[in-house]
Length: 188
Image 1 (cartoon, rainbow, N blue to C red):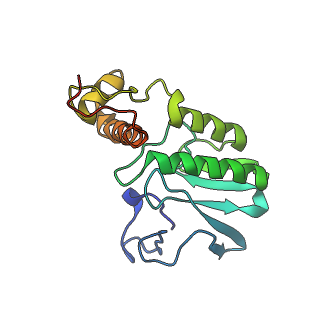
Image 2: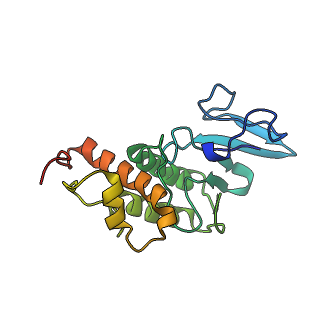
Image 3: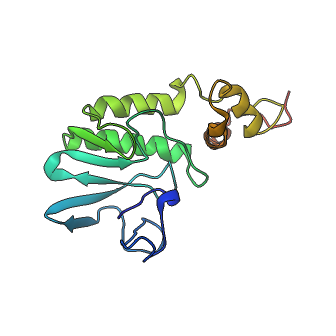
């Protein structure tokens, strides 16, 4: 079992299957090739959702297993150790890979397979970058951190999902801070 999402990772021997990661001291890294049951998988680093996310390219099938990097439905949450700038760069690299390898299918960790890799990656990049109706405001509200912002931005979403929404809003605010587009928390 290869788990790119830390929430799915178990220690060696806990699941009965080997678990590998791109930065946890195991032997999995960008460009590595895994061969199992006649199937070749090439490891593609895809940080963003998490710091150590990977996708797996199936060159013979023109397909890419995207895990949580690109979902079949909805948008990816930028987890605690994830980074929106890394995620946007990953989407750009995957978009180039889609053209370079003439990918025909994305196989997400959640939702249906996606038969238009270039179109899906273009759309996902637009949404993640700035086009989302749920994206954080361009200036940090002076009333508090991601908790208060996510309550406003995700007001119509099930409250059980708000902890994940806070991760995404925090990632968006951190990204905007890095661009110099957010005033300090105390600004009016």
